[in-house]
Image (cartoon, rainbow, N blue to C red; front, side, top):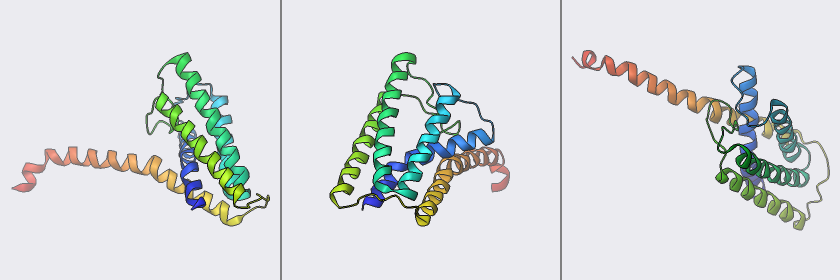
Length: 177
């Protein structure tokens, strides 16, 4: 049960990491409200936290993830007060999203959930020894592939279906004869 909750808590970070990498590879426009160095640092911290969660120590990873979600929530509120509702850049240019107080509340909720999981792991006797887990790193790689499917595959498939239907609609009368 704790593993499923850890996947739930870390999945938005996987989406963010994969979309950042995808955008950098294909040189998509940068929509993060801060500068590019801040965005790179955020993505690196997310990658370190999920690697810590899955590959090294789940207890330390949960604590680090809760701290990172807390910082992200404060950052969202800061940018909202400073710039208003601007593009978030959370999921790259594939999925447009805007900063909102709902996003800040979601980060707060994820902070609480991951902090609860951290405390629950401590009460269950998980001491959080630091040891590299090959299985955890493989799970992390699989989660990144699933996130890539969600970030790139699904929007592209929806676009292709709409484009096909628009093209096919012009030939519908000829086909039905």
